[in-house]
Length: 130
Length: 106
Image 1: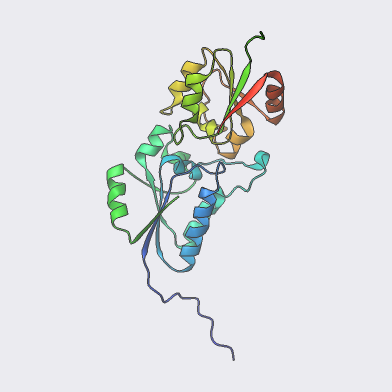
Image 2 (image 1 turned 120 degrees about the vertical axis):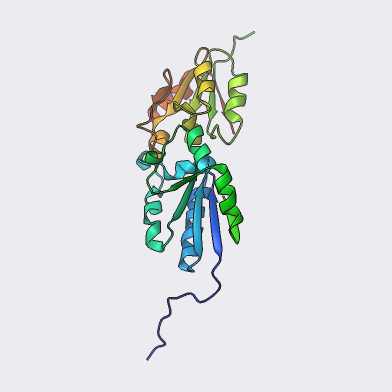
Protein backbone atom coordinates (compact mmCIF):
# COMPACT_ATOMS: atom_id res chain seq x y z
CA UNK A 1 0.00 0.00 0.00
CA UNK A 2 1.42 3.33 -1.05
CA UNK A 3 1.97 5.99 1.52
CA UNK A 4 -1.07 8.13 2.02
CA UNK A 5 -0.96 11.25 -0.11
CA UNK A 6 -0.53 14.34 2.00
CA UNK A 7 -2.14 17.45 0.69
CA UNK A 8 -1.70 19.52 3.83
CA UNK A 9 1.31 21.79 3.93
CA UNK A 10 2.86 21.53 7.41
CA UNK A 11 5.61 24.16 7.01
CA UNK A 12 5.46 27.69 8.38
CA UNK A 13 2.56 29.90 7.38
CA UNK A 14 3.40 33.51 6.70
CA UNK A 15 1.30 36.56 5.94
CA UNK A 16 1.93 37.40 2.28
CA UNK A 17 0.75 40.63 0.68
CA UNK A 18 0.86 40.88 -3.11
CA UNK A 19 0.68 44.47 -4.32
CA UNK A 20 -0.46 44.76 -7.93
CA UNK A 21 0.43 48.08 -9.55
CA UNK A 22 0.50 47.39 -13.30
CA UNK A 23 -2.19 47.33 -15.95
CA UNK A 24 -2.87 43.95 -17.59
CA UNK A 25 -1.71 43.00 -21.14
CA UNK A 26 0.73 45.89 -21.70
CA UNK A 27 3.34 43.94 -19.74
CA UNK A 28 3.68 40.48 -18.21
CA UNK A 29 3.68 41.65 -14.56
CA UNK A 30 -0.04 41.20 -13.83
CA UNK A 31 -0.21 37.65 -15.15
CA UNK A 32 3.05 36.62 -13.47
CA UNK A 33 1.90 38.00 -10.12
CA UNK A 34 -1.30 36.01 -10.40
CA UNK A 35 0.73 32.84 -10.99
CA UNK A 36 2.79 33.49 -7.86
CA UNK A 37 -0.38 34.10 -5.85
CA UNK A 38 -1.77 30.72 -6.94
CA UNK A 39 1.51 28.98 -6.09
CA UNK A 40 1.54 30.62 -2.66
CA UNK A 41 -2.04 29.51 -2.12
CA UNK A 42 -1.01 25.92 -2.88
CA UNK A 43 1.31 26.17 0.14
CA UNK A 44 -1.58 27.27 2.37
CA UNK A 45 -0.10 30.69 3.04
CA UNK A 46 -2.09 33.59 4.51
CA UNK A 47 -2.55 35.70 1.40
CA UNK A 48 -3.84 39.20 0.79
CA UNK A 49 -3.93 41.07 -2.52
CA UNK A 50 -3.85 44.80 -3.04
CA UNK A 51 -4.73 46.50 -6.30
CA UNK A 52 -3.45 50.05 -6.55
CA UNK A 53 -2.22 52.50 -9.22
CA UNK A 54 -2.75 50.90 -12.65
CA UNK A 55 -3.19 47.54 -10.90
CA UNK A 56 -6.86 48.39 -10.37
CA UNK A 57 -7.30 47.87 -14.13
CA UNK A 58 -6.43 44.18 -13.67
CA UNK A 59 -9.84 43.56 -12.14
CA UNK A 60 -11.92 45.77 -14.44
CA UNK A 61 -15.10 44.12 -15.74
CA UNK A 62 -15.85 43.29 -19.40
CA UNK A 63 -12.31 42.47 -20.53
CA UNK A 64 -12.38 40.95 -24.02
CA UNK A 65 -8.99 40.08 -25.47
CA UNK A 66 -10.17 38.24 -28.57
CA UNK A 67 -9.04 40.96 -30.99
CA UNK A 68 -5.54 41.31 -29.51
CA UNK A 69 -4.94 37.57 -29.55
CA UNK A 70 -3.94 37.29 -25.88
CA UNK A 71 -5.29 35.14 -23.06
CA UNK A 72 -7.99 36.86 -21.01
CA UNK A 73 -6.83 35.99 -17.49
CA UNK A 74 -9.29 38.29 -15.72
CA UNK A 75 -11.60 35.34 -14.98
CA UNK A 76 -8.88 33.81 -12.81
CA UNK A 77 -9.38 36.56 -10.22
CA UNK A 78 -12.93 35.30 -9.75
CA UNK A 79 -11.57 31.81 -9.02
CA UNK A 80 -9.25 32.99 -6.25
CA UNK A 81 -11.74 32.33 -3.45
CA UNK A 82 -11.68 28.67 -4.52
CA UNK A 83 -8.02 28.72 -3.43
CA UNK A 84 -8.92 30.41 -0.13
CA UNK A 85 -7.58 33.72 -1.38
CA UNK A 86 -10.37 35.97 -0.17
CA UNK A 87 -8.70 39.11 1.11
CA UNK A 88 -8.72 41.54 -1.81
CA UNK A 89 -8.16 45.25 -1.28
CA UNK A 90 -8.28 48.24 -3.61
CA UNK A 91 -6.87 51.68 -2.94
CA UNK A 92 -9.59 54.33 -3.04
CA UNK A 93 -7.31 57.05 -4.42
CA UNK A 94 -6.28 54.86 -7.37
CA UNK A 95 -9.90 54.17 -8.29
CA UNK A 96 -10.81 57.84 -8.12
CA UNK A 97 -7.87 59.00 -10.28
CA UNK A 98 -9.12 56.64 -12.98
CA UNK A 99 -12.81 57.50 -12.75
CA UNK A 100 -13.61 53.96 -11.61
CA UNK A 101 -16.10 52.75 -9.01
CA UNK A 102 -16.34 49.55 -7.00
CA UNK A 103 -19.11 48.30 -9.30
CA UNK A 104 -16.68 48.48 -12.26
CA UNK A 105 -14.68 45.63 -10.70
CA UNK A 106 -15.25 41.93 -11.38
CA UNK A 107 -14.54 40.68 -7.84
CA UNK A 108 -15.70 41.67 -4.37
CA UNK A 109 -13.10 43.89 -2.77
CA UNK A 110 -12.63 46.03 0.28
CA UNK A 111 -11.82 49.63 -0.64
CA UNK A 112 -9.20 51.18 1.64
CA UNK A 113 -7.62 54.62 1.66
CA UNK A 114 -3.84 55.09 1.55
CA UNK A 115 -3.56 55.35 5.31
CA UNK A 116 -5.46 52.10 5.88
CA UNK A 117 -3.36 50.39 3.22
CA UNK A 118 -0.20 51.45 4.99
CA UNK A 119 -1.42 49.77 8.15
CA UNK A 120 -2.29 46.62 6.21
CA UNK A 121 1.21 46.50 4.71
CA UNK A 122 2.80 46.89 8.11
CA UNK A 123 0.94 43.85 9.39
CA UNK A 124 2.58 41.46 6.86
CA UNK A 125 5.56 39.12 6.99
CA UNK A 126 6.26 39.35 3.25
CA UNK A 127 5.27 42.07 0.78
CA UNK A 128 5.74 41.48 -2.95
CA UNK A 129 5.00 44.28 -5.40
CA UNK A 130 4.69 43.93 -9.14
CA UNK B 1 13.70 72.69 -49.07
CA UNK B 2 10.89 70.24 -48.41
CA UNK B 3 7.78 71.09 -46.40
CA UNK B 4 7.10 70.00 -42.87
CA UNK B 5 6.77 66.31 -42.15
CA UNK B 6 3.29 65.19 -41.16
CA UNK B 7 4.00 63.02 -38.17
CA UNK B 8 2.11 60.21 -36.47
CA UNK B 9 3.07 59.92 -32.80
CA UNK B 10 2.47 56.52 -31.24
CA UNK B 11 2.18 56.10 -27.47
CA UNK B 12 1.70 52.73 -25.76
CA UNK B 13 2.38 53.46 -22.08
CA UNK B 14 -0.13 54.27 -19.34
CA UNK B 15 -0.33 58.02 -18.65
CA UNK B 16 -0.55 57.22 -14.92
CA UNK B 17 2.75 55.36 -14.89
CA UNK B 18 5.02 56.94 -17.51
CA UNK B 19 5.65 60.41 -18.87
CA UNK B 20 5.66 59.33 -22.54
CA UNK B 21 2.25 60.82 -23.29
CA UNK B 22 2.90 64.10 -21.49
CA UNK B 23 6.22 64.54 -23.29
CA UNK B 24 4.64 63.68 -26.61
CA UNK B 25 1.84 66.20 -26.09
CA UNK B 26 4.33 68.89 -25.06
CA UNK B 27 6.41 68.42 -28.17
CA UNK B 28 4.01 67.36 -30.95
CA UNK B 29 3.50 70.05 -33.57
CA UNK B 30 0.06 71.29 -34.50
CA UNK B 31 -1.40 69.12 -37.27
CA UNK B 32 0.22 65.92 -36.01
CA UNK B 33 -1.72 62.84 -35.03
CA UNK B 34 -1.41 60.76 -31.88
CA UNK B 35 -2.31 57.10 -31.73
CA UNK B 36 -2.93 55.73 -28.25
CA UNK B 37 -2.61 51.95 -28.09
CA UNK B 38 -1.89 49.19 -25.54
CA UNK B 39 -1.81 50.73 -22.02
CA UNK B 40 -2.05 54.27 -23.41
CA UNK B 41 -5.74 53.77 -24.29
CA UNK B 42 -6.63 54.56 -20.65
CA UNK B 43 -5.65 58.17 -21.41
CA UNK B 44 -8.67 58.58 -23.70
CA UNK B 45 -11.27 57.85 -21.01
CA UNK B 46 -13.40 60.56 -19.45
CA UNK B 47 -13.37 61.37 -15.72
CA UNK B 48 -9.72 60.56 -15.05
CA UNK B 49 -7.03 62.72 -13.50
CA UNK B 50 -5.25 62.98 -16.87
CA UNK B 51 -8.27 63.60 -19.12
CA UNK B 52 -7.60 67.33 -19.39
CA UNK B 53 -4.30 66.74 -21.17
CA UNK B 54 -6.12 65.01 -24.01
CA UNK B 55 -9.03 67.50 -24.04
CA UNK B 56 -6.56 70.38 -24.43
CA UNK B 57 -4.46 68.79 -27.14
CA UNK B 58 -7.49 68.05 -29.32
CA UNK B 59 -7.53 71.72 -30.38
CA UNK B 60 -4.34 71.15 -32.39
CA UNK B 61 -3.97 67.42 -32.82
CA UNK B 62 -5.90 64.42 -34.10
CA UNK B 63 -6.15 61.72 -31.44
CA UNK B 64 -6.89 58.08 -32.25
CA UNK B 65 -7.21 55.01 -30.04
CA UNK B 66 -6.98 51.36 -30.98
CA UNK B 67 -10.35 49.72 -30.31
CA UNK B 68 -9.08 46.16 -29.76
CA UNK B 69 -6.80 47.39 -26.95
CA UNK B 70 -9.71 49.23 -25.35
CA UNK B 71 -11.88 46.07 -25.50
CA UNK B 72 -9.13 43.87 -24.05
CA UNK B 73 -8.97 46.15 -21.02
CA UNK B 74 -12.73 46.14 -20.43
CA UNK B 75 -13.06 49.82 -21.32
CA UNK B 76 -15.23 49.63 -24.45
CA UNK B 77 -18.37 50.66 -22.59
CA UNK B 78 -16.73 53.57 -20.79
CA UNK B 79 -17.15 57.11 -22.12
CA UNK B 80 -14.31 58.28 -24.35
CA UNK B 81 -13.27 61.93 -24.48
CA UNK B 82 -15.24 63.76 -27.21
CA UNK B 83 -13.21 64.12 -30.40
CA UNK B 84 -11.04 61.04 -29.90
CA UNK B 85 -11.54 58.59 -32.76
CA UNK B 86 -11.55 54.83 -32.23
CA UNK B 87 -9.93 52.78 -35.00
CA UNK B 88 -9.25 49.09 -35.64
CA UNK B 89 -6.13 47.41 -37.06
CA UNK B 90 -7.09 48.31 -40.65
CA UNK B 91 -7.45 51.94 -39.59
CA UNK B 92 -4.04 51.68 -37.92
CA UNK B 93 -2.49 50.63 -41.24
CA UNK B 94 -4.26 53.48 -43.03
CA UNK B 95 -2.90 55.99 -40.51
CA UNK B 96 0.66 54.80 -40.90
CA UNK B 97 0.30 55.08 -44.68
CA UNK B 98 -1.30 58.53 -44.48
CA UNK B 99 1.44 60.18 -42.42
CA UNK B 100 4.98 60.86 -43.63
CA UNK B 101 6.73 59.56 -40.52
CA UNK B 102 6.01 57.61 -37.38
CA UNK B 103 7.46 58.43 -33.98
CA UNK B 104 7.09 55.70 -31.35
CA UNK B 105 7.36 57.14 -27.84
CA UNK B 106 8.74 54.08 -26.09
